[in-house]
Image (cartoon, rainbow, N blue to C red; front, top):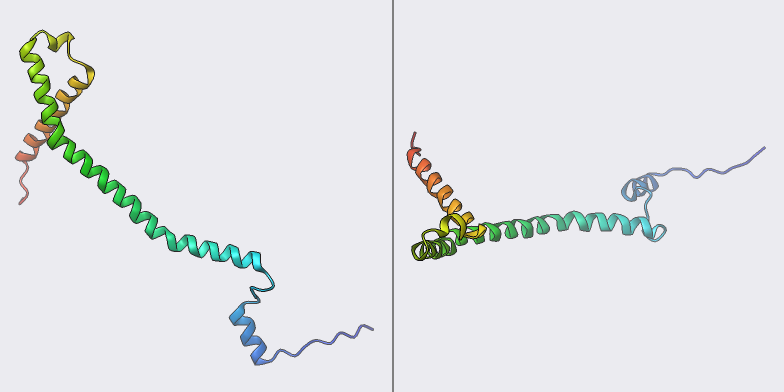
Length: 121
């Protein structure tokens, strides 16, 4: 007959096992490190999200500033080219110059359409 002696479960042992959940960092260092890394990753997420949102804000600011600073200057250069050589519109303009003209047309059309929308209605 096997005589195993079971320890009595006292309130203090029960309470300690519930608090520690049977997990003691000294005994299981790798599991402790894995859990700690998951917590650190969870804590870093808002910071990384904010950095990404700030990068997006800078990209939007760059696009906005390009439209209102460099695009008019580039369009002026296209018109100067067309004044010097009127036939350049069909064969002499580069694709980037044609793209700039299309961008200005799209912006003008968008502004014209937005002017028709009432914000109070």
